[in-house]
Picture 1 (cartoon, helix red, strand yellow):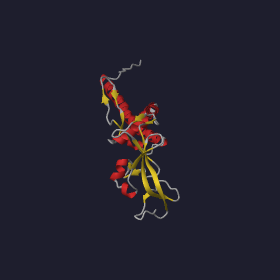
Picture 2 (cartoon, one colour):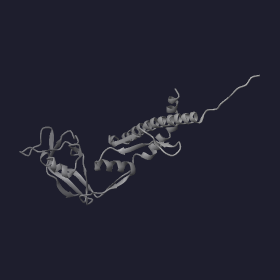
Picture 3 (cartoon, one colour):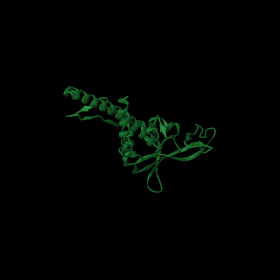
Picture 4 (cartoon, helix red, strand yellow):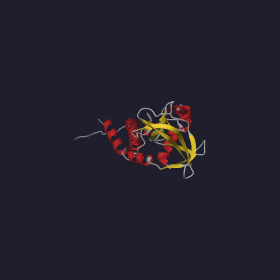
Length: 233
């Protein structure tokens, strides 16, 4: 006659395995969200570059929790954050305009001044404005700005008696010599338009951040499954 004494796992063993299983899920969850954080940031930057926004996407940063937040029972939470890495009002405004759309109106004057192809586009890494024109010496390098009215009634800021490249190269304007002659390789112009004044402008959204993050979020189950498999090796 054969007999057997079979005992099930003790409560302590069950509790220990439960802790092990939960910790396994937590570690896989932390790595999953870390991956999502990197992929999301990369996807946003690539989409912005593809939309013709240059390096604006570099202003987007991301981070993820390195530890889980535990709740009652076996529940836990781990999350990723996406944020603007800059405090520059200009950059923040551009991010908002190109991700949400915006109507842009002047703040300190009646007009928005748009630089033309006749003058430098930037000055010391900032977009050229009438204030920077004077501040950075372009009133002497090229000439002082003079306001006139265009045919449609909006104002223009022009520079009188300047030289431009004979080849027609853009942004080549320079002041005439002291004798009033154009410099070598240039031809004299009685007037060039430096800035066009407009009362307002609009920017349509070019990048849908929510759509991008939803696409990345859809990858989470597969990533979590892969990370969980690493725990079983």
